[in-house]
Image (cartoon, rainbow, N blue to C red):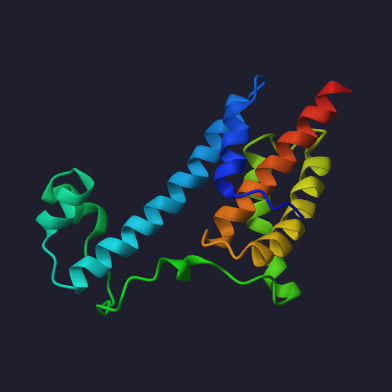
Amino acid sequence: MSTETHWEAWQRVIGRDDVDVLEVLGAAAMYERYFEEVQSHAARVARAQGRSWQDIADAVGTTKQTAWKKWRPPAERVRADPVRFAKFGVAGRTSEREVRSYELLVDQVVDSWCGPDDPIRTKLVRAAQEALEDAFDSHAAAGSGVPFDVYATWWMRQAVTKRRNELRAN
């Protein structure tokens, strides 16, 4: 189990001499999805607290119309509770059913590297499944505030990239 923080992992990825630009793109997309979720939640809470769309737009450097379009009111009402961003964390695995629910995520990660007829697909799927199992344990132990699907996608992309590079080297 690694004690490396998410920021340290990012610095390690972009700081290597042999950096894989696709790995950088995948990692950047993971962080982008996470921060988009945080922004969305913060905008909903700000509106529930009575903040104007102009206040929200000013905070992110955009127009009022763009802010409204991006974070318009959800169907359900959001209470003006204190902002608690740690709630985005997800506890570790609780059941085998939960593991099966991530099979689609495994397929999406592998699909980004190879097609359905690729001869290495089975090996990449296995690498992603093993990484998913590791992500359950690591995420729970790290107490991370990163949503589990983002965290697991990062782990799987790392494992699939590594395995793909190993297979190509042979």
